[in-house]
Image (cartoon, rainbow, N blue to C red; front, side, top):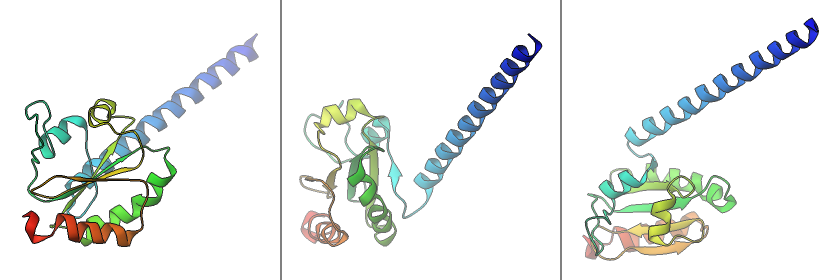
Length: 162
């Protein structure tokens, strides 16, 4: 009987320790996201509330009105999506290379389901290229860096869009 009690206590202690380690890891990951949001030339992760502030407040505006001060790329992704993971390093490179010229926003569709539903996101990754003026352009699926660069230069940074 004493051995069973001892084993139960050891198992309980192990479970509590594992849960605490997972919580600390989650807190560290969240902290990294906050740092990433504040760093120039970094990918910025958005919640629905932040999307409404920085990109488009669909509660207030019925017609498209970009809220940002620089053009942006919106990457609608999910952690489990292979093509999303494939383009992530490219988006990080582009955020650095075009620092001060564009924003690169990532929206996790699993966490921001309301936003993804409202915008009709059905395929991942869905990339939206948003110039300062004019309509955004949507692309679905992974693409090479050269295509990103061409679209950024032609659609987002073209003098006709400013």
